[in-house]
Image 1: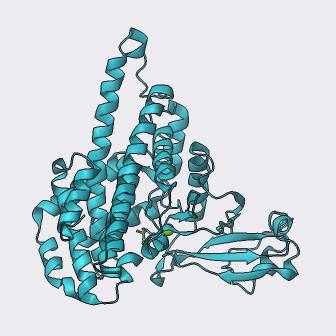
Image 2 (image 1 turned 60 degrees about the vertical axis):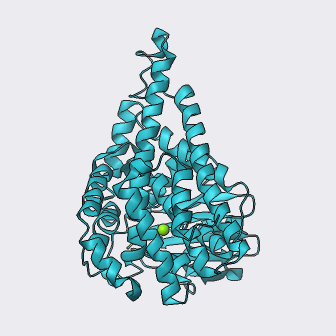
Length: 421
Ligand code: SR1
Ligand code: MG
């Protein structure tokens, strides 16, 4: 009987020997003797290798049995590679062309071999560099609408949907990380937290802020109990890769059934934070303000494209458990279905604002910070940007009713940053 080797982490030096017999790689790369391997992972969890061969290049991603950002003291199940694979298949099918092509998944080795996206870079890095991406808003708005709608009770029939819910209920470890890191850690003195020392006063204020903590707990309840759809679960600007014309979504290992607004809020929060960071990265010039405006317009476009596409799908693909055609369209009452759509979008917007507010808190006060703020070398300048993120974040989480649309959030953000558009 052929025994499969037990899990072992790859290294740049061992990868050709370990994977050189797999046709999924040799077919695209050519002979392993000519492979050049670089480890390029800069995320919080996994190993990522770029493998270049005679005939092409590929990416190999492998989970480690611990969280890379902390080290072996934080053991972590390899199952996350399985959930990432399962989620990527679903998200990719719901919005074709937006996820990298997968060539191989090996559950035992917790590894995936996928398309090497080139000349793409991580969106976060593009935002730090001040690059504009003309197609990005449409791509991300569509991706959100299609994945969130098509994975929901409005689109899925009951047996398929329940089986899927049961499958992803197994992603307990990563879901637990989100529950802690997103909704709880930033609001108490958790040893995992870290923050800019110039923010000590703000940290004390946050931890004494009962209204904010109540909002955090309310939103945690939404996240834990609002299993509306299969969400990506970590949909920030580090999970998007971009070239001038293309946008791809990566890293779906945190996927879980959750509220639609979770992915949208995570993304918009990261855009609003990237806009705040501009002032610290290159203070005061007209280009900085113009680029900040571009980011704000991008946030507005994503929401607009999302709502338009969501409405289109609502009208054309609402065939799932919650479809409701018998109650409305079948009785000649299209207005009823439109009223339900408006209510759904209003609920998503409300959730989006709250989750965005908490994402801002955890990226300033929790374990996992963002490169946009970290790249601001001067502590006081960084604190000024982070403080604005905390102020906006609190307003979004505690008083979402103040913000009717993205324009209102953008205007509030501009006001915090000194007013000038
Ligand atoms: C220990 S994992 C920390 C964070 O990194 C991931 O990208 C997620 O955002 C997670 O919360
Ligand atoms: Mg990630």
